[in-house]
Length: 259
Image (spheres, rainbow, N blue to C red):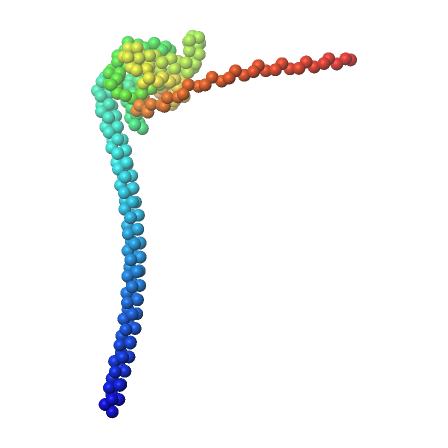
């Protein structure tokens, strides 16, 4: 009987050991699978983190570019403001008389002068009082690097018959006045001619309707526009001379037809 109990006990212990070993192996497999999944998830997280870090770096770089551009824009606005204040100080009398207007638009300064203080009527000859105003203006802008664009404008009144031999239309008169001012800047004040532009717009860019004498007078004006200097254009290679073309062949004579 005792032997029987011993056999039963040993058999139970053996079976219990087998079940425990099987369960342990299963748990080990589950643990290995969890570790593998965790490693995969960690690698994916590291990859995602690297991508986010790259995006953050690119965003910071882009933000830096925007900040630099904004700082440059603000510096330019500050310079324009100082330049405008200097111009207003130099031209205080003319501004009070409303013969001169100063406008800041799209990063440019424009000084608008009525033709009556700069030119003789129907002429591109600069008056002495016009020279005084131009001298004050040049004193305020000569040390800048801006391009100086001189624009001539007229009202819509046609050129009189008396002046048509010299100025056939308002185109010629407006262009001549702009050229006269640009030439005065160059010859009297030695402004680098590469900084100068002169344009005639005739009557086609009015600032007021040509319906009253006062408005017509406002439209007869010279504008000095200060533009930020553009980047230098790349040097161009000299154009190659084209090979002379052969002279066109003479047409072949056609035989006369007899009647």
